[in-house]
Amino acid sequence: MTGGPDGCGRHGGPAGELRAFAIAALDRLQPAVERLRAEVPSGEGSTSCAACPVCALIAALRGERPELASRLAEQAAGLLAVLRSALAEGAGGPSGPAEPAASHGPRRPVQRIPVYRG
Image (cartoon, rainbow, N blue to C red; front, side, top):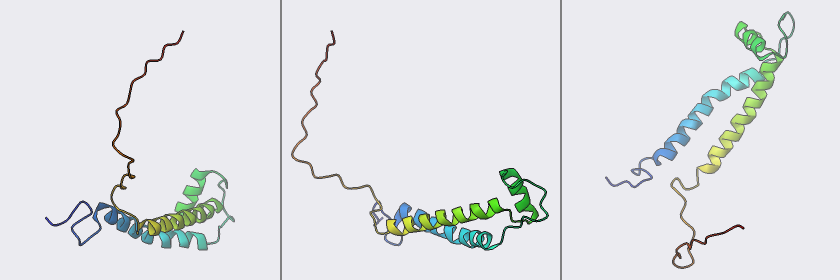
């Protein structure tokens, strides 16, 4: 094997594979979240409450778009944007463990000092 801990040269190792998987998952989630954000909440004809997450979920399953679902979609879109930017920033970073800082000489052994309280 010619590859090191970062991979075999054809791919970026486990960190690169996970980054690619996360970006692919974000690409699949983005259209669904954008579709939910674009749809206008439908409040007319709804007999369920407006604040209960259970009622909002049931209304979303029935095809209605409650206000809670649109607000959650807005927050999810922001979260997806943050995750995407974090993955883009981390692409140039080291994929392995960080190098230890330069030491200032050999390490001294730790001396045990007994403490007596009166």
